[in-house]
Amino acid sequence: MNEPNNPNSPAPSTRRDFLKKTSTAVAGGALLGSLSVERGAHAAGSDTLRIALIGCGGRGSGAANQALNAGGNGVKLIAMADAFQDQLDQSLNNLKREHPDLVAVSDDHKFVGFDAYKQAIALADLVILATPPGFRPIHFEEAVNQGKHVFMEKPVATDAPGVRRVLAAAEEAKKKNLKVGVGLQRRHQPNYLDTVKRLQEGAIGDIVAMRVYWNGTTPWVKPRAELEKKYGRKLTEMEYQMRNWYYFVWICGDHIVEQHIHNLDVANWVKNGYPVRAWGMGGVETRKGPDYGEIFDHHAVEFEYADGSRVFSQCRHQNGCWDSVSEHAIGTKGNCDVSGFKVVGENAWRRRSTDGESNDGWQLEHYPLQEAIRNNIAYNEAEYGAKSTMTAIFGRMATYSGKEITWDEAINSNLSVMPKHFAFDAEPPTKPRPDGWYDHAVPGKTVVI
Image (spheres, rainbow, N blue to C red):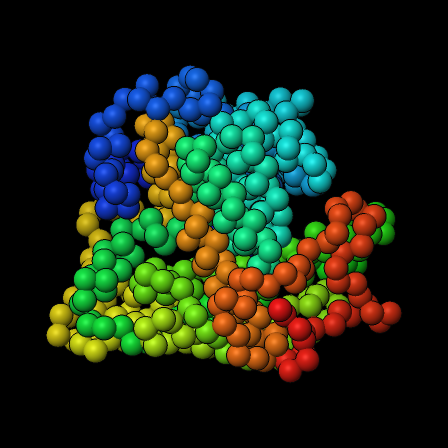
């Protein structure tokens, strides 16, 4: 789950604020501001970036809102696509209220269904991909094939074949000079940027371990009975799982992938690399019932990196427990509360925000992408987005199997969690038992490679 996902978000940072106050968020920020729009024309051949939104839920609506904030009068939302008409209509109404002059989605530019993304992508210069993550590799590949710039939400896949598909499309995007942003917003926040820079410059010496957490409470759930009452009919299993998508591995990835990727990405960023081995444990202790699908309610993973250092990872959806969403580094010369922007030890330091500074990463991540499109600057976040997604999938493989797994085994796995084809009357990969409950992975028995 991405964090704030409300299209009516707090007052945005402006492009001027971005260039003035957060130039460290993108290499060459001052240069970007000095180049003319004509230097690198986008696909439209005009000053207006045409945006299409694929996936009109809360995060998609939020990302579209932020993209429109970033572009001002130089962008327009001109197409939308979603599997569900009601979701598209609600999103469109919200965005029209927020940006009446920038939303121009005519009836013939509203597309509904499993293939709707293809039609919306064809109309745009910049595509926002914000469906549930299981669909991301398919949609990203199509956008690149059509020659479109992309902002895609994290995570970017739910299994290793999907990650490899994204990595291949990312290479193709580079060849086509397409710009790609990924919604790992901490990498655009000045407070994180300054803290990670200090760590990489040796503020706490050699980093020997990290602790990363997303321990919180159960997010939203959409019970089958409530959905069927709302729509006045029985739902097919595919529609139910798509409406209640958070609780099914093929479409969500489990919360270690969908949420905890943020913290694992920070660890990879600090370490400037990816883990080579993992061990884990997890299961379902407190969150049980047919509407909670097949995902675990807790995971704990130990990742080993190439230099022998370890990252200790926890994520939990259990009410009434100790909560923390944070990252911490342990070094030979001190420690760092990364998410608290504080170093303790020989080089003690604490970052304090300057007046007027924005650390709204969800907003800030859209400025450098649009600047890169307008000024033809190389910009592609897809590789680290895919590899941090794979780190989270790697962790899930370790917790589901209970086995020691290597990175090479994990990323080269051909085990797909995705449906064979997409239709509301198609069978999803996981189906309920006769009692309505779903089976969970069983450590020691479940095969993940």
